[in-house]
Length: 422
Ligand code: AMP
Ligand code: GLY
Image (cartoon, rainbow, N blue to C red; front, side):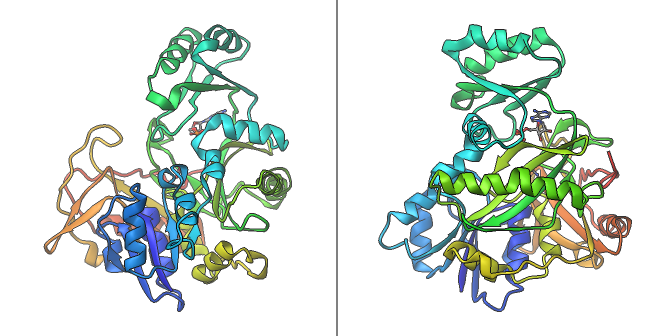
């Protein structure tokens, strides 16, 4: 098969890494890719939100399977674009249609969906600017901290959690007046859930599903999970507190009703679902749906999948996933992300990275890098994820950290406490 992956992060590098291990893969393209993916396939420098351009490249390269890494093209309807074109509709696609992608693209859509299918999530109401008075009143009925969410995609910045009610009223007004542009024209106000977060992923063909290894990411920039939110500073899989009892509840109360809802709504969902969950005293609740894999979770999930991923993806897109088995390895995986100084605020790019050739103990997944001549340069906030595997979480983490010791670039930063139990 000729396969193309859209995206340029560590997630896409990890997907590419797993895909090249399959006998079914003939040629692999990554658009636009990064300094790591170019070692596994061919990088294609295109704008992945320009569907005509993506389509032309798929035809030119006789692509059989297209995997969409990030959410934006999905929410903008890439699946629908391919489906409605005579030249493109034969291409198998991993990712939902635009309607289903609203599960991530609109918080109020996903909250309505969860309410309709009785899926446990925080109590909420959503408001537009014409309902400002009612929004302020609803806020008064809640206890702190107050959770305000821009309805639409806001590059991971659209959620505010505030302790002070006066500040919450003020921010609510700013959001409804366009603090996050179109994304916050509607705002979801919800109850705060005091729990420990974890990430569950499934592959679904819209009828059946396969559960992927469970992971936990470490989102904050600072040790002890403090400071600003980032795209993710590290992850582990499996997760110590996610035992069979909790997973059974996740499956019965969340996964099954979600798939039932997708079917009942007539959504075309053939791809990954990422359930952002929180464990409140042994009960799982949905914090959010994402219609893609997580990053950096993918960097620990892929190495723990024993089965052929291309076979699974092919079955997903064709709608015969029930015939497949997903085998999860026993090994523990941990990934630690090295980032640029200043991230998640302002940071510089273009720093030369050295020492990677000496890394043996971990798998290296590039996130924000690029090649220039024979040099490898930093090209983003999150730079490289180092994934160690071992018989225990500690063993896996030791390998990740040993690898980091061998590399160098100006301003290298990373968390030293990935994997700690909260
Ligand atoms: P979201 O974009 O919905 O995942 O929100 C971003 C982050 O805010 C989540 O990963 C949680 O850490 C936090 N968060 C969102 N909603 C809630 C909630 N209802 N209760 C507690 N924390 C939340
Ligand atoms: N790791 C969280 C995300 O990918 O959104």
